[in-house]
Length: 62
Image (cartoon, rainbow, N blue to C red; front, side, top):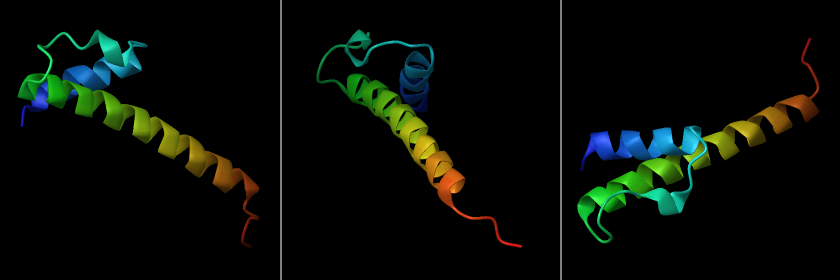
């Protein structure tokens, strides 16, 4: 597993790139690692948005 390619995929997502912008050759481990990094960054953003939405709806505990 290549952390470099995962990091590059995550950066591409954060920079507003598209999943189809993967610069690696289709079907290679590098391609898969880049895609995984992109997808994980997207999922983390969605998860954080859901957590924030839920936190806003929960009553404060005193």
